[in-house]
Image (cartoon, rainbow, N blue to C red):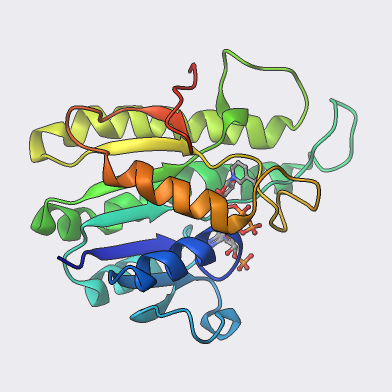
Amino acid sequence: MPRNIVITGANRGIGLEMTRQAAAAGDRVVAICRDPSAFPEGTGAAEVLAADVTDEDALAAAAQAAGPVDLLVCNAGQLRGRGGVDADGYSAENWQASLMTNVAGPFLTVRAFHANLREAGGKIAVIASIMGSSARAPGGAYSYRASKAGAVNLAQNLAKDLAAEGIAVGAYHPGWVSTEMGGGGADLTPEESAAALLTRFDVLGMETTGVFEDYRGEAIPF
Ligand SMILES: NC(=O)c1ccc[n+]([C@@H]2O[C@H](COP(=O)([O-])OP(=O)(O)OC[C@H]3O[C@@H](n4cnc5c(N)ncnc54)[C@H](OP(=O)(O)O)[C@@H]3O)[C@@H](O)[C@H]2O)c1
C-alpha cells in the first residue's frame, strides 16, 4: 500500500534522491524545501511545500496541507566549519545556524507533524551522522559534531516519549555521500545512500525504536 512520506531538505542531495526513489516505488511523497522554486522537475513528488525547518509557522502550514504521515524524514542539515579550534567557520552566527537547523529543526518538524504521525501510526527517521557519536570523537568540525550529537540525543528522547503512541524513532548515518555537503571524494552516491536508508526505515518499528545506525544497519555507539 502506498505510504505518505514527508521529507525535509528535499530539493538536493540525499533528500532529493530519497524523494525520487520513494515516489518511484509508489509512495506519496511530500517534499519540503526552503525554496520550492529550487525543487527540480520530474521527481514524482506529490507535493512540494515551502518550509525552513526553523520556521514554526511554515512547518505548521506544511503539516496542515500534508494529511496523515506514515514516515517523516528529518533530513535537512547544515555543515558549517570543519577544522580545529582556531579554524574559521565557528562564528556565533554559524553555531546558531548549525544548532537551529540540525537540532531544533528536527524537533520543530516532529512537533509540527505530531498529529499527522499519530493519525497514521507513523514513524520518524532523523538523519544524524556518525560525526554525532560522542564515543567516536576525533576532534574538529565542532559545531557540526555537537549539533549531530544533539540530533541523536533528540531521537533517543523522542523514541522514549512517543513509544506510548506507537511512533518509532531512529537516528541514521547515511554514509559519506557525494553531495554539496559530502564533496566529490565521498564513498557513496546519493542514489546508493538513499536506497540503503529507505530500506532501513522500512524495518524501523517499536522493537527497534531508539536505534542509532548507519545506512547498512550497523549500530553506531552513542
Ligand atoms: N553527505 C554526507 O556525507 C553526509 C554524511 C552524514 C550525514 N549527512 C546528513 O544528511 C543530510 C542531508 O545532507 P546532504 O549531504 O544531502 O546535504 P546537502 O546536499 O547540503 O543538502 C542539504 C539540504 O538541507 C536543506 N537545508 C539546510 N538548512 C535548512 C533549513 N534550515 N531548513 C530547511 N532545509 C534546509 C538544504 O536546502 P537549501 O538548498 O535551501 O540549502 C538542502 O536541501 C543532512 O542532515 C546531513 O547532515 C550527510
